[in-house]
Image (cartoon, rainbow, N blue to C red; front, side, top):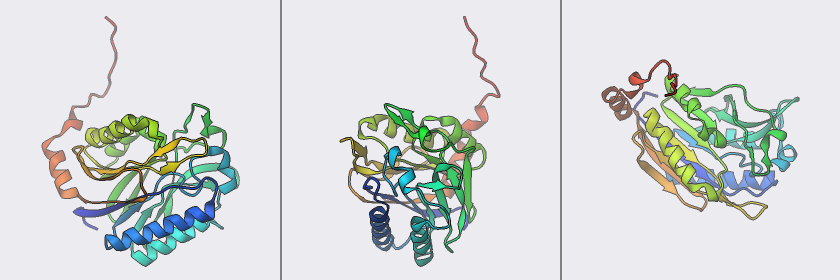
Length: 273
């Protein structure tokens, strides 16, 4: 795939807490409906913990191993049938020793390229994600057919350092897959847009919608944002798809004209006066 126009499709859905089978069925139906609606896509993206919903206490109950993962088998089938690469949001992956909030990357032929494990775990306001899963050890770029995607999950968005590391490593498209609370709309909108603008990169920012067990709600404001911060497509608090074509030629032309990263200092030593 030459670095020209790339078709991006993000799926927003509502997980039912702790119901792996039902959530797999929901995502399968949404994938089929939207891939047929848009006549396919080069890359498809899913939200964080769509297999289990945002409830860390249920993570272990819905964990899967690579050997017997029903969610991965479904995604592999969709990738092959629709000839698309899938950035699979995240599921709870158990490797025999630890549990991870893990994003699978599945290629068009159904093979697994690899995984990104969430680097920053959200453990505030009585929600201790770190009590149930292990932290990922490093950022991960998925390079697929010449396109480089920098992968992040939810709380990672609050750490611009990881996105700048991706940009320095040559990322074309930044991704954040989340289950983001409705009370935090301003941080979500501002940080996702900022990550795109400050790194001159396309940004796929998707989250879940729907109610949680404690009566709170997921935000449900998934977006595809261009390298200048313009929202190319968005969806509010319903299930559905967000679609856009990323013009990487124009993005690289813009980067060549506006070389802001060249002005970064090697060190920012703070002086006290």
